Each structure stands twice: as C-alpha cells, then as structure tokens.
Length: 208
Image 1: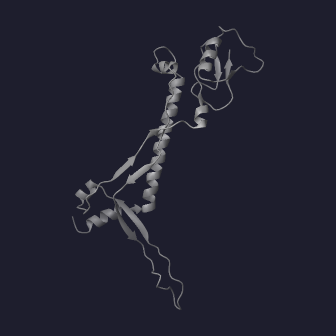
Image 2: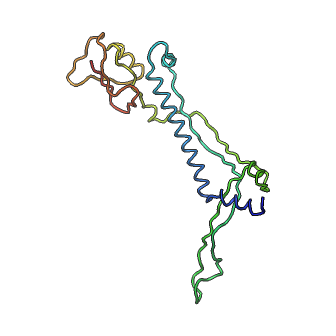
C-alpha cells in the first residue's frame, strides 16, 4: 500500500456529514414502518382466521391482540474520519480591489465511516469500531389504531353466526337498503368490504 492509499480510500467513502446523519434517521423511520406493517399483517391474519385447525382461531377465542412496537430513541455511535474539502476566505481577506466584503466560506465537512476491519485492512491508525444502539419497547396503540377493525370472513356463515362473529370483534353490520332481516339460518353470500380490508368507519354490509 502506498502512503496515499488510506487517504484515497477515505475520499472514496466520504459523504457530507449531514447526509450521514440523515441516512441514520431514514433507516430508523423505515424500521418503524416495517414493524407497524408487521403488526397490521398480524391483525389481518388473526381476524380472517377460519376453521378449527387455524391456530389464530384459538388466539381469537382467548382475546389476544397483536402488540404495537415503537423505537422511542436511537443512540448512534459511529467512528468516522472527518475531512474538510473546498475553498474559502478568512474574515481578514477581501475580494476585489478597494476592500470589498469578505468572501464566504465554501468549505464542506465530509465523513467516512471507519470500522475495525477498515482500520486493519488499510492500516488506518484508529482502534475503534462502529456501533448502533437502540431500544424497542411495546407501547399502547394510538386512539386511531384502537378504532381500526379488520373485516373478518362472514361469507358462508349463517346470519346468526355472522352476528355473533361481528359482535366478538365489535364490528357494526347493516343490510342493503330495503332488504329485510332474513331468518337466522340464512347463509351470508356477499360482504362489503371484503375480508381482510381495514374498516375505518361505517358498517359491514351483509348480503344474502
């Protein structure tokens, strides 16, 4: 390795310090979205469970509710090599003739992450390793999440069974306009919205 190689590697891996910090924030936001999506998927699987052999059916019966998780804070410890690039004028210098205004700085601070393997491979004189620490804890769902309902499967159930199923999930139901309530044994043949959809307001419409 030539004496210039470590510096060349730092230049190749360098990024503006602000971009490096912003990327950590974006990664945390993406992780939070992934956890929220997984919880919503668990809610859908739980509500749409059917048949005695489906383990989610037992979870329904014991009143299990999927847990929402949140990343409350992130502490990042990143070993970096800082460099200044660009050009600028000191406050004592003036531009042009006749003593114009001092020139503004065009310097940029660049950061290159340096971990233990990088230091060993390129003989970089720094004994340190990068680390990212964060905590994940369960938190109560937001009021909007508490009101969220996932539509269950009621097609194929009798009218009586459908009413019981919807009452268990605290979901309101209604019939199409000008349709009288059928006998309890009448089988449900349509539902709107479909099973697995999120019900944010209104009621589930049953058809016979």
